[in-house]
Length: 108
Length: 108
Image (cartoon, rainbow over the protein chains, first blue to last red):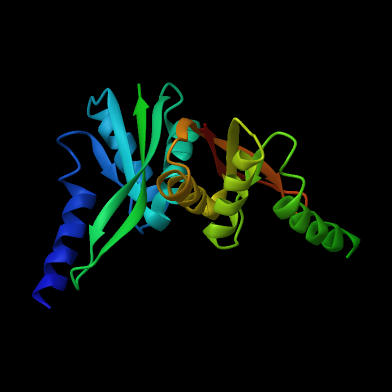
């Protein structure tokens, strides 16, 4: 239970503040527009590049976010790089499972 | 109705035969392993490169397919290119909607 609580708090933090230092936006299960807003805000705050990261089922949403941000809000932003990879997750019971991940770098 | 029938036939064809000419595998809603098998088969038939294409929610599955094929079956295959884009779809009522797409090129 303590675990669950910590997880929830962390989720909020990612969406609001901790994505700042390296201009990384972690795409999760919220509506795509939330993350588009985060990307646009980072660029407006002077970032030269913003990286979108997502894992598993949210990969599709990350691609949506990049396309919406680029086509609708940031016409001068370019797609610098798209890369895919596998990450290993530790399950709660100690077993490991692999999950696909994507990283999309937008540049102004 | 004629439309629906054609669509169904086309779906089957993609999974079995028509992906051949340009070594393209279209990733849809079937289990990822079906598409992994298609990729491995193409390489075994002498293809030097295989392209995975997916749209919308199946983008995540296309990434899974590329990662599983690479890490589990084709250790000598490399990721040549990953690109994302937007495609415009015509709805049945004539209106248009945009959908994100991904293209992943694997090379041996």
